[in-house]
Image 1 (cartoon, rainbow, N blue to C red):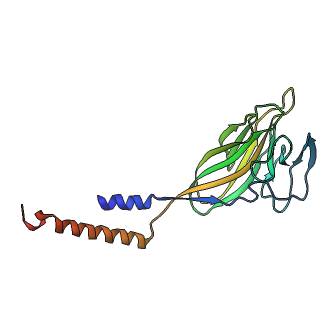
Image 2 (image 1 turned 60 degrees about the vertical axis):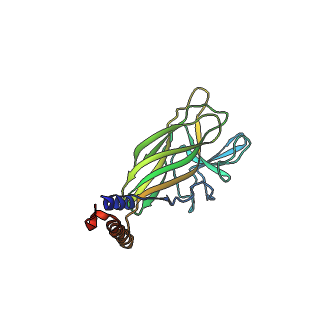
Image 3 (image 1 turned 120 degrees about the vertical axis):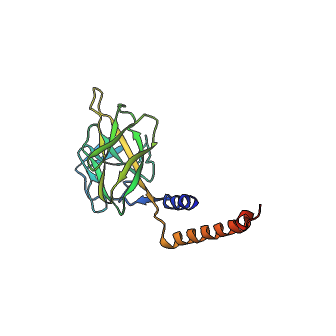
Length: 215
């Protein structure tokens, strides 16, 4: 029983590892933009493109930067999702099956309507929806569940409607994926555990007088 418990504990150890996302903070320069619109002192670059962008920007999404009403959560730039959008997405790869956790920062566009919700999708399947408030950046965490080894696509989509007094938009920054993978014990490690348990058992028998016929 002791041996089974020891091996089970060794096999169930978990390790955290980040998943590589390109341009996770939207800081990389872009070559072009479909449209540039001015919003007070902020410039919104819709659907930017470029070799280092990493993300695919659908309609209603893009990149903006620090301005008088709000600075980026990290760095100087952030993405936006304006009203009901197409997906802002990026593919990623897992070397092995893992439980994946998503972290990111979200803020409501200052001075515009509240009510923007952002839907998170993995492989075109919704895994959760989060809302924004008017209190600046908020750190968000969401479990994406257990994903198989191979290629997957992470996506964000705005769900807000254009209202009577204008649009509602969310700002997005500092996207990060982390995995929890069950650690399989190496043969050498298992051998060491077995040797230690055998030695402990032998020592216990020598110290137990009943093993020598004494009462």
